Length: 227
Image: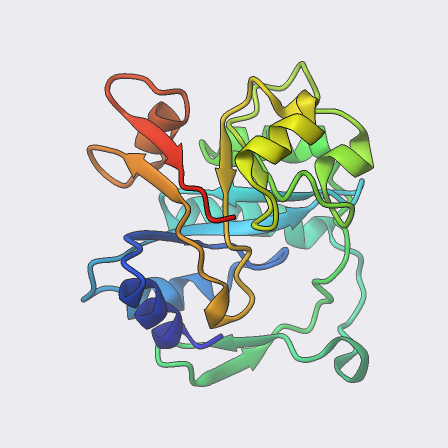
């Protein structure tokens, strides 16, 4: 998707905070942040990291420097395989207008060699948010691949997919109860924007979001029913 179109669609839907979380990649995040500079939209830098167990995790940060540090770890943990454009498609890097800059040659649509626990440690060391993605899905979901939420890791929140209600998710997957839950669009196309998470924050930062996830100091999170 093209950065200015991402920004325009989010603004048109009244969304004030989005996160860009490409699969094992971050090189297009700065372009979307730049495209949003004159808009009432905060773009959090992030990544959807795939662990060696084939679990997707949303990793969110305040700064591009933090994200760049994670990218360095991920690049070194990815298999040394070149992308097959004919089979997997292009991996374009663009500028803030959507103009082509270069191709990412290393194959991204694969697992890293980072275990779930190793990925957690890296993100926490960088002071980011660690949120297992679409945990209820069979494809790349935490529940189906690990069978449980690791009880010894202070995970910030869990994300449920857009295709299940909060009530149904809690009934079908009782192991996620007790964790803060968010519901995201998993946006691959412009029509996928959801805007289901309603945060009360003093400012759009990771520390504030952490407070909201735990309902502390007047910060809060409500997940709107979109089903």
